[in-house]
Length: 73
Image (tube, rainbow, N blue to C red; front, side, top):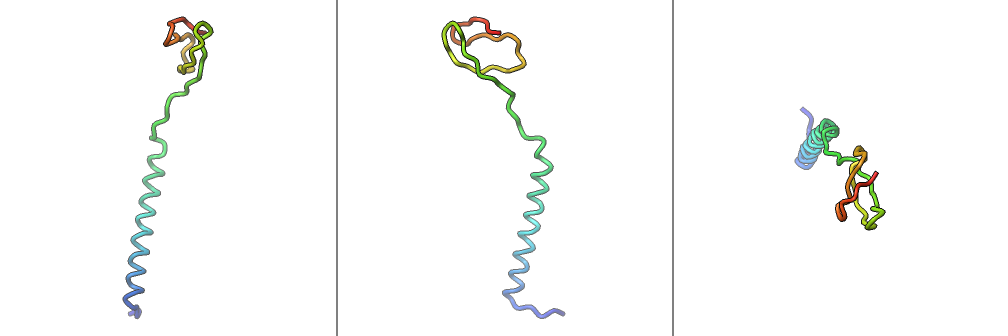
């Protein structure tokens, strides 16, 4: 049997516990990285009629100004 003092046993136990905890944490982060929420891509626009600045989705070909209701290209 390997002779160990109580301080060495405590350190070894603590080190192994933290190592296992770190490995579990990293595997959890790696497996859930692709499932995180990503907000839609938006672009800022300025209305030529009322000069209001707003954001809208890029995939919309035509959108309306939220303030005056005019259509923008």
